[in-house]
Length: 474
Ligand code: BG6
Image (cartoon, rainbow, N blue to C red; front, top):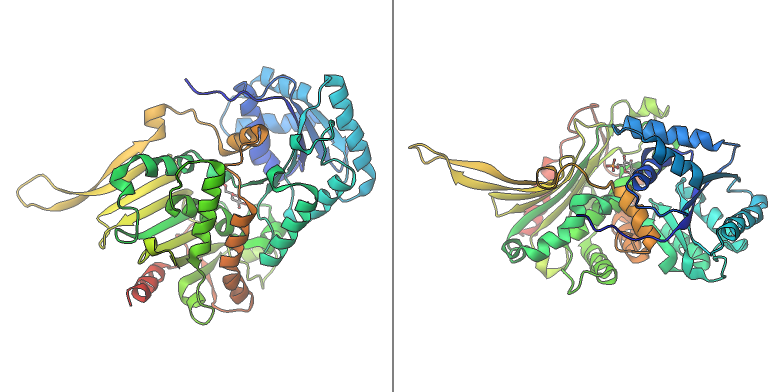
């Protein structure tokens, strides 16, 4: 029987409720949480939109998205959501309606007869975070109705800034209005089932924990392949690219869970500190020749025409290899690879033990969540031939099909104020510091962007790990 978190009712204010992210992730997650009775009666959802949007349009969107994801949409769940949802017209970049929003939230609480925790979810392009946060502060919306800040949280989506400078500015600006305690920086990859398991797996299986170092592990590769291209996110992607979209956040977070020092207690504070220490210890490639030899950037063939920019140098594929200053990881290579419009959707963390990789431990993040390990055995027969086989654990086989989507977890944890799954400002800044030299070098035109065919495996990256291992062994 699953432990069901007991949540208190909140007001969830969603900026960008008509946007792509809300459609694909946030609204379906709310539907499923409501379906599983994980959100309490009395929950309120306030959808912010610039135009007049009838709430029925949002309900229709939920119906459609849930059905498209292959679930049957339950009418009674939609009715419940309908009773919780209201729409509020506001242009987030214009001051004049924020005071009215404040009154509106107050009215909801007056009607409920209690002060509710408030969550402002910025499901919008990151360029406008600052301006919204400023306005929330200027109009006293960073305080709950009891004038206590404790019950107010801000949920923001990555990328948190575009480089070191903008990330520092964003952090400083947000902190003028919300304390670090109140800010929840979403990295939904941390909420995926297998990612949740990495620390527990490492801690409770001594057969692996005793080998978790550079003496035994040659390579740790975090690989996130996507089949989809950029779809309709032209402006966003032209500005961001694969490095900022996935490597700076999801991939570095998954890697740090896999390789950070194991803290005494698995509390949010200790885990955040250990991840931060791990990322800070990674060595940025040397700008002279390291960047060209340790990082590959690529672009899928139809990208330029999709964004209608024949000169675009925006990368849709990245692979890079890094080493660590931490003596524990002397000799190990860390590789991060991601790309769009590739041959398949797959996210996996592979840990390669031994020189010729006899044992590869794989954390399968998606699809077919689970963990497996390659072993060498002798093949039956008289020839004494060796063969690689897999020992395999799969969530669906052992626990059935039902599991909560990452966005459901993100919302539950934000509502209950559990910060474990969210990135701290230190983690965010150390990631930017690590990647900044590569971003700068690419901007200056160092290394060509390699074109790859849509639906292929992306550009050749086989030389990267080889280069670094030769360098490390010197
Ligand atoms: C998002 C990125 O954070 O993650 C997208 O902005 C990417 O570009 C998406 O497609 C992938 O998420 P998932 O959960 O579908 O693997």
